[in-house]
Image (cartoon, rainbow, N blue to C red):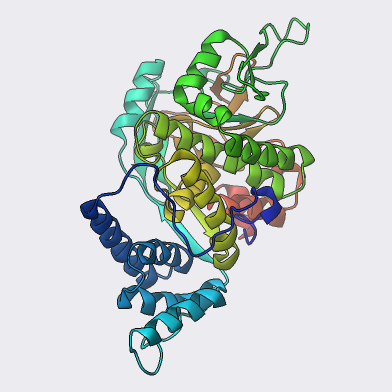
Length: 418
């Protein structure tokens, strides 16, 4: 978890470093908008400083100072927080500015101590939207999403379900492929001349864009959800190419983080294309998640990425937004040989090392949830998020994999070991 949000700076384009600057909107900013932006950043900076989230607090502090560089409150806060994210230059600038304002004796606020880890949690409790999705999929008579003590939310069987019964199929909300052998929109295998891969290869058509799809429908859907903007922007293309290269290297840790960040970028681009905040778009607003991160490297590297994306899309995007999206992806993504995907209803299924259901990523672009054992009415439907890996690993390694998703397993196997 220590490196969950760290990757090399050379994966970001030149000039993407998180210096003392803020994202510039391409639209003109009125005095009233500037005032509202400053007040928002000032309030959020104080809130996150008080809650111990130094990286996010510093990001909001810098954004606020970008609007009002002589604001004493934020200068004091910046000087106090700088050490927690190992930004001596920030502290020096804030102290110098305070001295020019006539503040004697330096900042009055004590330095915030550096923490090895900080954790951001996103908790959602609503079940109505998920149950509506289950109804639409035809699973409304079989399953229900409920609040479950110790788990948050989960899927519960409404009737006895025999072994091997299909429960429902779902297309991914977001998907990023591992290789060009799969559709960039739905992860369906692309045609290779084999009967098992009946799809065709449809190129994006954009200049210098290598994305390919299984159908014209998938290409058009991707375009309407922001891919057109992404592939036409040289900076975005370079960023995606660098992250894709990291995935191809399959270096432990970096590859999975890069894959998750590609999903985050897709969430951001789609939200902007639809005129919605990325966290408020349909499906994303239903998800819960958590992420543990190291403050200094996250502020430096993820902060650089945040600025880079903000400048590319021409809208304000904060470190809090990117970290929150990463938390949702890390806690809910399904990894398969095809790539990484986030689902709306399937994400409600909780983990067990001894599951009673299994997810099959078929060659149709859908994930199919089926009963692995007989499931009784009232039982929670549980799946193994580490299927194919955990059974061959020692308990300690399996527990480490689950902790990265912030999962607690209550199966008999894990409870006995604990």
